Image 1 (cartoon, rainbow, N blue to C red):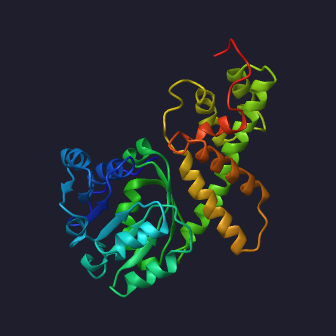
Image 2 (tube, rainbow, N blue to C red):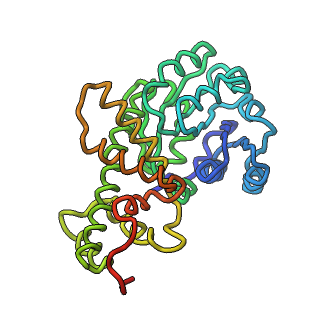
Image 3 (cartoon, rainbow, N blue to C red):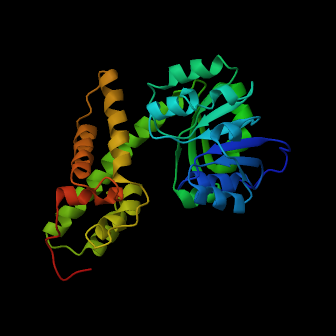
Length: 309
């Protein structure tokens, strides 16, 4: 169950940089127990955050000034470096003893330089990639894996425990969280691709898609991704497509991280490589901004069966 708001952290301030699909619900969840400062370049998102009780800031540097923790969500290690150490980076505005909580999947490569750059300013990195969508973020029902020095983890706990229903500490080094999330994304990416391929085959064989999903989910072939993505995979052929809950190009990024990790380890990963190619093909076909369930259209561009829902 999600953690209840904890009133025992008076004066604790967290800055949330970016109030998008995940940042805004995380900020509104954190407001239930902490003082939250927020920044986004979109004025409309900033107003929504302010309406929910977030203290709006005119810049990222203003948001982080004096904060105990800073929540950062970025798409890549390059973006992480820019947010922290770029021309408008916030690192120079962080107070000594603060923690930066990285919630994104960026891979392990960027972590050592980030840790060193922050340590030079007396700031620690808490490597805490998360899983779960906006609804779960707003309910404090995220799954978070953490790699962090114990003292830094304790300073970040007021934030992490409000956001997570499952908080797993996988190691005491920043980078350990990224490593586990890389393994997680290998499985997720392969499972989604496999679910799409299986449902494309069911369609080619003339099977009823809803009954196929029900039968598969009840047996040994069932998986979280089949149950979660299956209905959305079947919506991929509709005019509107499935609601975008996780963009296909996110798995282009994540499977790229998986590929780099396996090559660096000298480990063959034929299944991950095959799945990565499907996502890359989907992106090349203009599906990058579609829900990742649209990967079925790479395997089977159109449905073969007719007259069925």
